[in-house]
Image 1: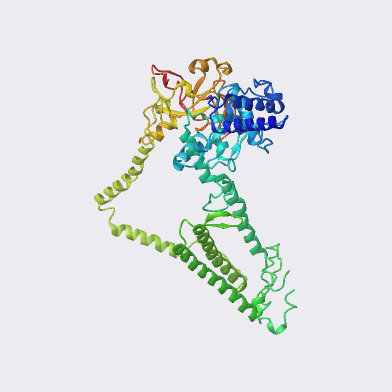
Image 2: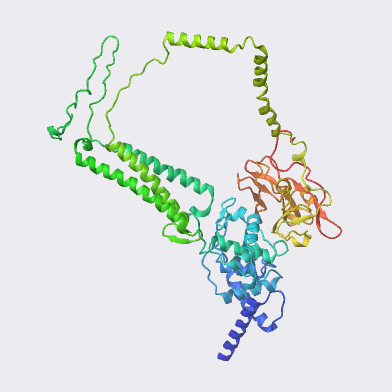
Length: 259
Length: 352
């Protein structure tokens, strides 16, 4: 019995590793390990996802079809905690705490990828900073992304309570996956229209303007929203302070006898 | 109500004599002028030590300003432009910017605060009444001015030397013409420029990201791509002028989801090409929600339904986004099948 458990675990790990390192849809690894990972993923799927997305991933009135969304979509949605979604979400499924381990996510991804070919989970090579052109990334970001996510990725509002979330603490891998798969109302930017190098450049740009060590030359960036918040601050607090000082100076009498 | 707290010997001698004299009402002025209220002294007027203290405070503020100015120059000279510091509520910021801003602020504020303190505590605060006088000059002064003018006119011989007079009038009359001629730069009228873009039959759709033409298979359902007409390069002199009219957004919608019949006809396998320029005031509009097929304009929230002929479903825009008719050329690349059939962007007087 113990030997069987060890064997199963070993097979599951192999499958998990496979899902990480190999592009889905191009089967190269051991068929057995692959099918076992898929089997495990299917079990997780039946428990966590099937109630909305249907028993075979074909979708129901509560959730879209997952055929062809690919491993990248699963990795993004589950590891940012967006999926599984609460039964009564508002306008948009928010980011929340992820409840699955990476191995489980990989199994789920393998299962979904087996339903139909779709984008695979990107590798460090694809989203890492090596060989990225930050200036070009800025140009691409302003052309493709800034309209919703703001010019330094601070996010913004959309229609009917929907919003483009801030990109401030989103990992490069998740940014890459979001561009590739277009989660929720975000349009997708497939490699055919926004190349791998383009995506790498965009991620490098975001790290430069919105990373942990990003410095704001003036300090006090007020949300990075540009002239709106800066103008509001200057008019309300700057002018307010001037008026308050003027009132204080005039109201304080210099007379020896206070009346 | 004057100054019972202040010792008698400290009070100035004239206290109360010039002020507080109340005039009585009579037949002509039923409302009595109450005059100025009695003057009250400041502690600095009475106590020389307090005055000294104020003097020192003002001098200290002015000295602080001098030191801050020196510190400003020193920061400018010594702090490298790329040094970053962490300052608590502000976060990571440029050390040079912070030092220059703080020292300049302190230098200016200290001058202002010193001047205010000086004026309030040490400068005279005696109230003064200054009566108004008529501004009209006396009649003899006016008569003298008129005489001088007449004499000047006679001596200049303007009436006799007609050539000078006429040429001077000519020069003065022509001079404003230069200003009128410059108004020409407001024109020429745009003519048909607003009605045409660079798009024409057979022009390939070039991806703005990769600068390559596109095949229909590159554009998947739910994606968003921006395109420019073939031959327009970013370094072209006219690039901004042309892209402002020709900017295109490409989305692919399942043909079954497209409600507008003409939109479907003008699309290619569900790939639709709409002008990216909002029809309200011309902002670039590309906040595309792929599930609802709505495109939102960030300026005034006009919302267009890209699955229904880009109809306006919310906001101030006056008409739908113009659609570009597209197809595929012999080599399988997406191409325009003509220009937009209506002017792109905001409406104008003669748009029709």
